[in-house]
Image 1 (cartoon, rainbow, N blue to C red):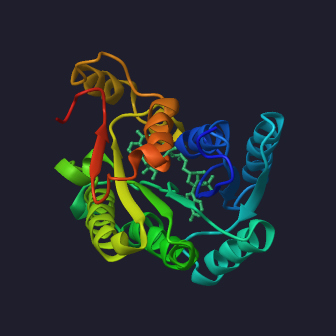
Image 2 (tube, rainbow, N blue to C red; image 1 turned 120 degrees about the horizontal axis):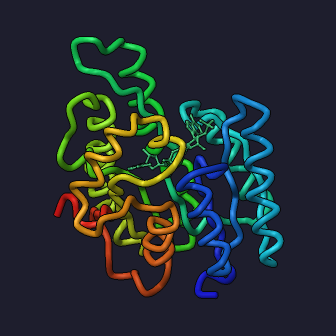
Length: 251
Ligand code: NAP
């Protein structure tokens, strides 16, 4: 119950890594706003399931719909959380997409969509949430980057640019916000089993597995453990860092 009394906002929390993070923060005692994007009826139902699971844990939760590419929607989302719980202590910028293709085949739309979701979305959410953290002189910003943002990957130049941008963004806001007792860190997962990676061909999974010293693919809960720790008081002297969680593939 290390996060009792805290309020968290997790983007893209209806499934995958975001869902596991929302549940972990709730397990640690936090109230959790579960962001989802209403593109399909299933997203709303998935977000509602996460909210119900948190309530079953005996914690408070609320679903908040917003497409994080849209500044007005993000502003409204943050205001909804403030209206209900009066503060935001922990922001996890998790929502992300990939549109993988080689550079010469990449459409401008693929480039823009990945940059707008993975980088601009994190910028917008941070900008609107951080003012409440500054007011109370306590905050945690945890950005989900990727090992690809550290080392690059053929066929993912848009995704790598966005995830590398997240790292530079994190380091900059850590410097800007340190005097207000707000930490900002990036988490760089390797291959984690979610819908994002389930669509990859089996041979790509096998080749990834062969690179992992711990000899297993990661689970969303592995990432959630690290994010949960970074949100606590125990991580209060860690800021501006990129922490890789990839079974040892890219030390
Ligand atoms: P996922 O299963 O595809 O889930 C992504 C989540 O982000 C979904 O809930 C999705 O909602 C949401 N989202 C996408 N665009 C959004 C938008 N514009 N506004 C609000 N929500 C939006 O992916 P995941 O594997 O859990 O990935 C979570 C994060 O970890 C991403 O940032 C990803 O880049 C990063 N990551 C993943 C891996 C991996 O191996 N899985 C590795 C490194 C980093 P919709 O249903 O509306 O699309």
